[in-house]
Picture 1 (cartoon, helix red, strand yellow):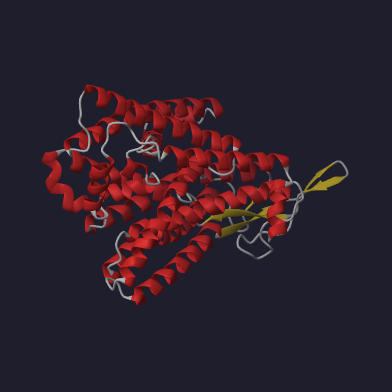
Picture 2 (spheres, one colour):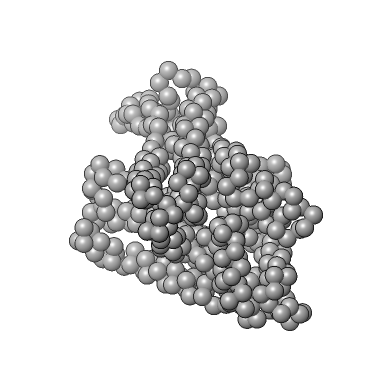
Length: 430
C-alpha cells in the first residue's frame, strides 16, 4: 500500500496538484480560526451550547466550526451553493440562459460570472443578517463600525472561499467546492464522536447503540461506494463499413449510465436550500410560528428533504445527460442499440433506462439521508445528523471522486492503480 502511495509523488504534475490541494486545505482551516473582531467569544460559546443541535449546529457543520467561532469563513460556501442552485433552476426555465448554456465555453463563462455576482449579493445579505443576530443576542456591542467590519469580513471570506474552490478544481485534485465542504464536515467529526462517547460512558445512551452506530457507518460507507460506482451498461453495436481495402466497425461497445448521476450534488443542494426557511424563521419574528415545521429533524423537514433529493437527482441528471444528444451521437457514429430503431426510439429507450436507474439512486440517497434521523429518534444520540448519513454520503462521495481523479492521472502515465482489480473502485491495473 505504501508503494502505491509513493506513486502519487512520482508524477510531477500529480505531486503539484496534491500539494496545492493540501495547501488550500490548510489555508481554509486557518481561516476558520480567525475571529471577527468585536464579538464576545464566551457569549458565542454559551449561545451555541443553548442551541442543543439546532439550525446553527447544522450550519456550523458545513463551515468546519467557523460559524461557532464567528470567524472569517463563518458563512462558508453556502452563498455560492445557493447561487448555483438558483442559476441551475433558472437555466432550465429561462430561454436566454438556456441559449447561453448551449453556446459552450463562452456561454458557461457568462453564467459563471452571473453566479459569482449572485454569490456576492447573497453573502452580503447573509452577513448582514448574521451580524444583526449577533448584536441582538448580546454577543457584540453593535454600532455602525461593527456592522461594516463584520459584513465586509464575512463577505470577503465567502468570496475568497469561492475563488479558492475554483483554484482547487483547476490546479488541484477533485472538485474544490465539494472538497471544502468535505473538510468542514471531517473537522466536526471528532467533537461529535467524543460527545457520543461521553453519552455512552455516562449512561445517557446504551452501549448497544454505540455498536449499532459503528455498524451504521460501515453500512453507509459500503452502500455509498456501491451506488456511486454502480452502472447500467447499454450495449451499442457498430455496423461494418468499408473504406477502400479497410473494414471499419463491426464491434460492440457499452454506454455506461451511472446509478447516481449527480453524485453528492442532490444532497448538498437539498441541504443548502433547506437552510433558507430555517434562517428566515430565526431572523424574522413574524415567521417564528413556522419554526417547529422547518426545524432540522422535524417531520415536515424530512419530507421536504426527501422531495428535494428526488427533484435534484432528476434535475441535475437532465442537465448533464441528454438522451436525445446521446442517441444522435450514437447514430452519427454508425452505432445502434440491438432491437431498437435509431433516432427517437433510441432516445426514448435510453430515457426509460435512465429514469429507472435514477429512481433507484434517488431512493438510496433519500434513505441514507433520512436514516440518521430515524436512528437518533430510536437511540437518543444527539447531533446524529452531524455524523450520520448525509455527512458520510458527502465525505465518501467526494473522497471517491478524488480517488478516481488521482487514479486517472496514474493510469494515464502507466503507473499501477491505487486499488487492485475488483477492489474498492473496481479498476484494473494501468
